[in-house]
Each structure stands twice: as C-alpha cells, then as structure tokens.
Length: 269
Image 1 (tube, rainbow, N blue to C red):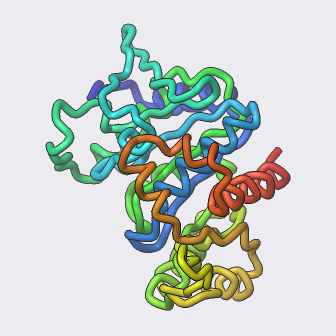
Image 2 (image 1 turned 135 degrees about the vertical axis):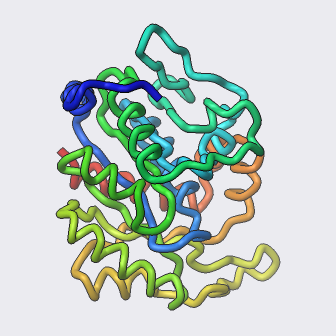
C-alpha cells in the first residue's frame, strides 16, 4: 500500500465521485443469503439497459464476483498510480481483490486499517470513467467494509438482502438499523431464496418459509424490491462464470432481477 498525504485520498475519491451519478451498497446482516449473486445480477441487468455500471467487490477476504462473472483469470491494468477496472461487458466494469491475488486459495490476512486503505485506493485510484451507477458488494455483517464505504461515499443508497427464515431476519433487522444509523438511503429489501417451483409437479415449495422480506419491509416502512425464487440455474451459471447467460434465458428469477432494477432506477437520480 502506498502512503498518501493526509487528505489526498479524500480528494481523489471526491474527483471519482464527481463522475458517478448514483451509488449503491448491497449488503446483508449475515452470510449465506446470496448477496454477491444478487449484486452481480443487478449490475448485469442495469448494464443491459445501456447504463454505465461499476461493480466494486468490497469483500476483501472473500472476493467472489470475478469468478461469478467469468473474469477470475484477468488482471487489473496499471499505469503509474492509476488502476483500470476489468471490463465484463461493454457497460459493466469490475474491481476486486481477486485480481491482485497470485492464487485464489491465498487468504487475505488483514486487519481493519489495511482494509480501509484498500477500499480507499479502489475508490480513489481506479479510473472508472463516467458511471450511471457504482454498486458496492459488501461482505456480510456491519463491520469494517460497509462502514468504510458509508463513510467514504456520501449519499449512498442501500439494498439489504435477506432470506425468508427468522434466523436471517434477526440479522437483517440489524442491517436496517445500521443503514439508518449511517443515514444511508435505504432503497429496499430483496428477499432471496424465496420459494422453489418443483420442475416435476410445478408446485411451489417454501423451503425457507416465506414472507420474511415483506415482514422486514413492513416493520421498518421500507420498500420490498422483490422476491427471488430458488433456481439451480443461478448456482450453475455463477459457478461456471456465466451469470450473464442467466438473464438471456428469461427465467422467473431473471424477470425478478429486471423488475428490481426498474424500481431502483426509478428511485435513483
């Protein structure tokens, strides 16, 4: 990590943000809710509408977006003290710690200050260019990474991902409270893994109960953006680095992602 003069990083971040119309933090109160999958699909769906999207993987310890988007073998282009994000599609760019690891099984063993520095450089040194949306995919919980993003990027909108069961809702309530404490604009809640349609009998099965996202939305008077059904194709496309293909298939899940994006865009600037 380079040493910068006090305030220099803040100036760089401010210059970068001058080119960004809207900022969004995707996070969750707990792990295992499919937050990164949601963030990646929302970014893809936005980019397909002709919007310029930057996707920032703030999960320093578990950067998965490069794998999901088929870019795990790519590297960031460096020029002097500037970094250029990896292009996923014509309208979608990605920056992730995954691009800086020699091997994907090497852990990042960093404490808070180093993680804060990395996020500062991802924001200030990366040449995103003009963006309609900067989407930050944060690790689960309310720790260093989402706190750093909230502090470094003003006027950030928040999308909270949950699953229907009560265990997830307990932590989602903390996530909502966290967002309100930091004065984030809560764009809404996404309920992931919301029901499964049996491919044999077409009966819908609530594997993880139902209505959890709606319950949170009602309790805190925030929008329910959508319910994403369980679909094995989401898992398969992510593992194969072909999430973009999922939207091409016009699946029920793909339709929900598109509807969520429409709601978010209408609430954006």
